Image 1: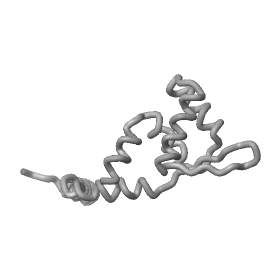
Image 2: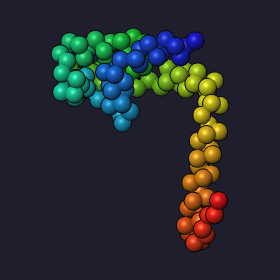
Image 3: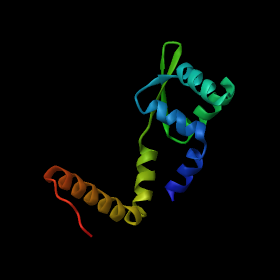
Image 4: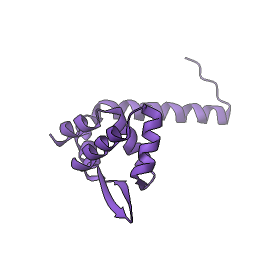
Length: 118
């Protein structure tokens, strides 16, 4: 059931965007705030509240660096989500495998000059 709680946290587009920004590495609270304020037109205190929710729920960690606070992704809750989604992967994996097979077949036919007649 960990996945359901995680989806509550990630249900907000601002929090998802913060995690996307942090996926490339650590960022200062100020850098996150500047990007989020520009993209979502929300105040700095609102950004701070979103960072707090992510931190309090284990999605991010923060470490002091002089006067700055550096945020990074904590992957444990994301692994929980992935595990929870694994229950449902069987619904889409065969379709994706079939698509990959058809794409490979089409590439092979173009490469060898074969023509498909149905």
